[in-house]
Length: 347
Ligand SMILES: NC(=O)c1ccc[n+]([C@@H]2O[C@H](COP(=O)([O-])OP(=O)(O)OC[C@H]3O[C@@H](n4cnc5c(N)ncnc54)[C@H](OP(=O)(O)O)[C@@H]3O)[C@@H](O)[C@H]2O)c1
Image (cartoon, rainbow, N blue to C red; front, side, top):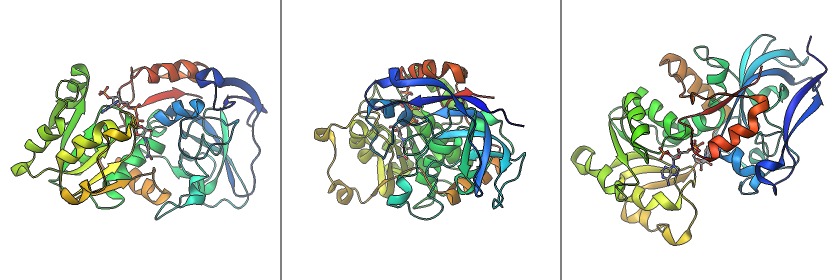
């Protein structure tokens, strides 16, 4: 039997930063006929979770909202019309609950957990059965809770448009969640990986994870050219996981191979329009620049299978927070003290 009340976090509005996060008691939600009640065991944070309470997230949000998209847990009850899941199944959440397969569309962008819809920083959550995926069998709940956003986005970058091939070269920027998954997926695919970081200490960890080449983007601001020189015949990088935005795109163009793909995922380095290359740079470099918005349930299932087959374990920061410590977790991540994913253990 589930209890009748639970704890949950709420982002009250978009104006008060982390002070706008409130820890509250709430009733455990009831299950509709096509819904699943999940006892959430873990959640993980993404950069977008930090900027939602600051009003800086560019996709739909509805306040007040229970934050965070990423979660994993155990099914405790299913509605009468649910066919995909049963009590006791381990599941993970889908980021855009309405993005089932193929291209993302506008209605799906209004179904993002922790933004448009209530998310995972709570003890129990009700989700439509379409909005869950069976968890990876080789992973713990904390590890499974990291797959929803960063992992799927990286997977989509490498497999959603032009599929990565063994022997190709992938460049990942920095040591955040998206980039570390990119490194792990690329190594599992037999690719060569060039990774950048601002920290020599983090460089050693990148090496342990299998990065073939590491460039410090602070001491080598022209890292794009350095990366190109590291590729076979200096021809350039096949796939770039671009998370820096305006601050890094110029260098990405210097590194990209003819017919390579730059997947534009984030803007950690800022949005300064004066620093951005122009659309015509795609012609002079003969490359594809593609915006990526997480991914579909179909892609997430493919990714979970690959994680199981290759026994990939997400890199989770040594410091794991409790649900009650969520605000501290936000501060820790904002200070970029983390390596890989930052997790919150719930139940
Ligand atoms: N489009 C989508 O669907 C989607 C999905 C997920 C995430 N995102 C976006 O992708 C970005 C990364 O997300 P995340 O969750 O991986 O973030 P994260 O975990 O917060 O990444 C932080 C790391 O990024 C690196 N970094 C910061 N500024 C950088 C710069 N100028 N150049 C290169 N690396 C830099 C730093 O690595 P070092 O400490 O090693 O230097 C830092 O530790 C964010 O902007 C996020 O909003 C987009």
